[in-house]
Image 1 (cartoon, rainbow, N blue to C red):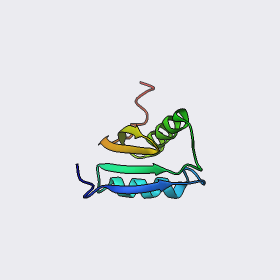
Image 2 (cartoon, one colour):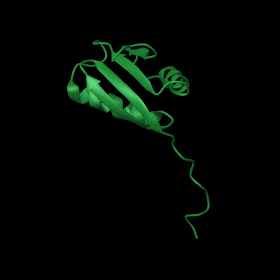
Image 3 (cartoon, rainbow, N blue to C red):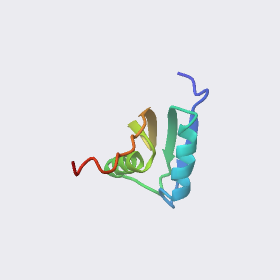
Image 4 (tube, helix red, strand yellow):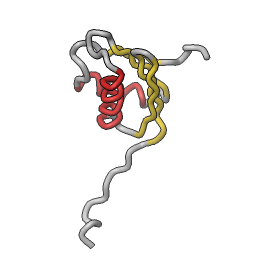
Length: 91
């Protein structure tokens, strides 16, 4: 597998900021697969990396699957989130 067309991001000591989320959302509009490197000064444990991946899944626009390899999260977009229709719950 080549890295051609693979978009790469780094998340450092500031963590998941609104700027990171905005950049990832913009990148996922044109790419399906993104590699996110977690710098070692941000997290150390496997559980922390899993929580970070879940937080990204919740904050990003769309549905994603992720795979964690070392300090790298590979995210693949698998669908779009649908808007809720208002007023239908009360019927």
